Length: 299
Image 1 (tube, rainbow, N blue to C red):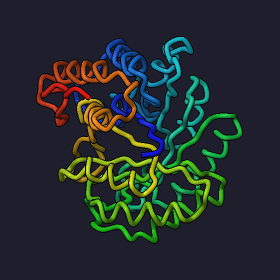
Image 2 (cartoon, rainbow, N blue to C red):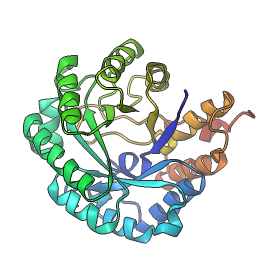
Image 3 (cartoon, rainbow, N blue to C red):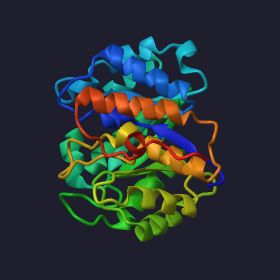
Image 4 (cartoon, rainbow, N blue to C red):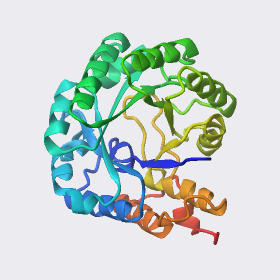
């Protein structure tokens, strides 16, 4: 891992499927702790209709509360699904816009109400507006490794979406394993093909641990040249619009593994573990992550 960028998505992907809405003040406390731990990027929320995802109703308020002094050196990201979301994000100070298209037609319709083709055209246009406004942009392919509704996703379909991004000048690209179907051989092959398309591509991976291969897939991605890793505190998360929603790789588990290898030792693992434990206590149930339960080993 020559370069490692950790993108904490717990405040968005971790919380979006939870029925119990977390108070804004509690979210702010968790986000500020994650920033203080020295994580590179924290995803504050998504700009979606509050009736569709009530947990994200305070995203604009959260960004406005997290002023420059609260952010330190951490980039704050927000997920955008359409033009209205982009407008809201520009108004409240998002640093990094994350926009995506699902390679699964079924998942795309359930998640955005649009087919993949229409979503791609609109997302690329919105990404261009964000770039023109001087903001950072990351574009993704969701359900890139398989879909709970459609099964295997042809790699050429994923590559076609990536090529469209590149033609639009968008080179920060994430592949999301929304359904958790990925396996290490597939991960190496697909990221390897994508990284050969253009020398300026910077790839990020987002793996759900639905079938227990999340961490193995992260290591396979890193071996292929991926430098960005999206994870969630306590392993919380799951897309509410996929067939089997399951958690992410836990941020504290990844940071712990890196520190055991002498990497990213400056990140405050204790602070992340504390957040994960608070999240588990808040919801009153066992969480998928390991290290917040076992405690970390020395490095």
